[in-house]
Length: 297
Image (cartoon, rainbow, N blue to C red; front, side, top):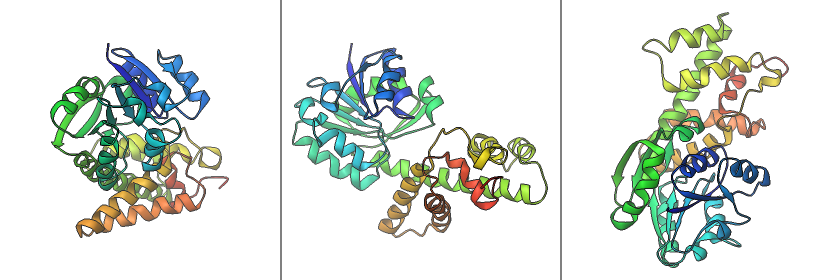
C-alpha cells in the first residue's frame, strides 16, 4: 500500500488522515499530543516529528494552517523535506496563497521532492466522507502519484493548471466568495434580530429561497445559536482566524493583480474586528455577535 504522511492533524487534517487510512498506510504528525492520540484512534500511526511521519520517497500531505507552519513542517527541526528525499512528493492542501506555493516548489526541488498544489474546500465533515472540492495545480508524474490520494478525498477534483500556485489561485477566488458570504449572512442574521425576527426561523426560511447560500445554511444556525449561548460561544467548526488569514490572501491577490475587491475588503474588516476582539479561536460564525451582541458580551 502507498505510504502517506499527513502533517497537521487539526480540524481538516484529522478527518483527512482518517479517510486516507481506509485505503493507504497512513502516518500522522501534529504539534499537539492530543491530536496525535486522536489520530491513533482512527487507524493512523502517530509520529513524534514530521521527519518521523514520512518514508523516503513517499508522500507527505500538508494540512496545516499557514505558510509558516508549512515551512516549519518541511524545513524546520526534524522537517519532512530532507527525510522524503529524492523521489518524495508533497501534496499541499493548505491555503497559503499563490506566491507562497510558487516559492515553495524550488525549495523542495533542492531535496529532490516534487510539489502538487491541491488546496481543498468543504470542511471537516466532508473531508471525513471524501466529499471535498480539490483544485489542483500540477502535472506529469507528480500529479499521477498524487491522484489516488486526492481521489480518495474529493467528490470534485479539478486540475486548474500545471504549476504550483495555480491551485492556490483558484482557492483564493473560492475564499473570496466564502468570506463575503459569511459576512453577508452575519449582517442578515443581525438585521433580522434587530427587526425582532427569530434568527433561527429567518435562516431556515431564507435558505430555501433565492437569497439562500451554502454559508447561510451552514453558518446561519450557529449564528442564531450564538445569541442563546453564554458570551456567544458555539461549537468551533471553522476558526475565525482562518478567514483573517484567507481574506488577507484574497486582498493581497487583488492588489497584485490590480483588481479592485471592495466587497472582499469590507468582509476582511469584519474578520479583523473579530481578531481585535480576541475571537481568533472561536467559530467564524461568531462574527455575528460583533454586529448584534449576544447576551453576556
